[in-house]
Amino acid sequence: MPLCDSAVCFIQWIIYVPTFVVGLPLNMAALWLLLFRIRRWTESTVYLNSLIINDSLLIFSLPFKMYAYEHTWGLSMGFCTFLESLVFVNIYSSIVLIVCISGDRYVSLRFPLQAKRLRSPYSATFLCLAVWVTVFTLTKPVYELHNNKNNATRLPNNNIKETRMCFQSFSSETWKKKWILIVMETVFTVSMVAMLFFSVCVIQILKDMRRRNPRDEKLRNNKSLKIVLSNLVAFLLFFIPYHVAALVYFLAKNRTEEPGIIGPLRDFVHISTCVSSINCLMDGVCYYLILKELTASQERRRLSARGNMVGRPGEINQLQPMGNV
Image (cartoon, rainbow, N blue to C red; front, top):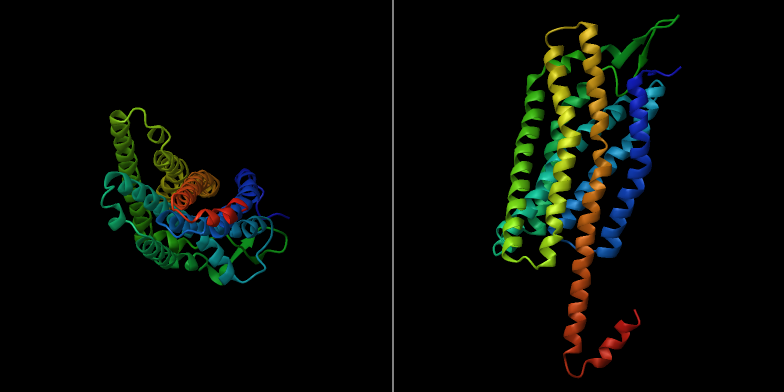
């Protein structure tokens, strides 16, 4: 029989199945475009690659998560905790990477003359590596989530026995570690303030630029604004519920064990965690905007190079092969 037959599990299935079915080809297509069509190493491609890898890790865990809701866990608990850690890796890597992308856009608009010095693929790569190392290190407590006896849970049936479960039956000791909640909420709050700051500044900068250049079509369809706003919407919509749920559940868990209180709050945590995974699909908007921008930039450079060759005497023959491409 299924281990989970509640309304919460039904909601999780409704969200996880489309997220996996749509998210997997979406991420693979974006990665293919970056690696084989655009093939450029810029700040944008570094952040975008990191975001795609981050979302792909969560998508990889979803089939196992859906299986774990229906069956007892037959694989190793080490693999189980690794999959569980990917949920937290995705949430906090997404949060920080989204802030990095918005911050990068802000710097390019606010400091156009210094942008080449302040922004570089090397610094973006270093920043992304630092994010990955830090987030994976901070997921260490996840490997203690099943510190109940024998990593097991007793199921009510005629022959009561201990059954291993994954993505469920977490140790109560984990919720007594205040530093975990402090780190989670601090990262989220600081990131949210930074996102709001970058978004407001980008809007204001572009508004001023449009006022000075009302006929500039590029300013009217500026992709930096769309990227920052899409990231802000995703950030607020998918990550606020989880952090509110985690905070309330943590406070309640340390004050009472009353099932009538803890049960609904636990469901709130599960549903909000599930909702946060939809961010993998919302990131597709960011993929589209950045890839469209990179493709347009690549096309402009190609046309510019072609124009330069036309302007050089004695090089007409060199254009003929390009015309056949």
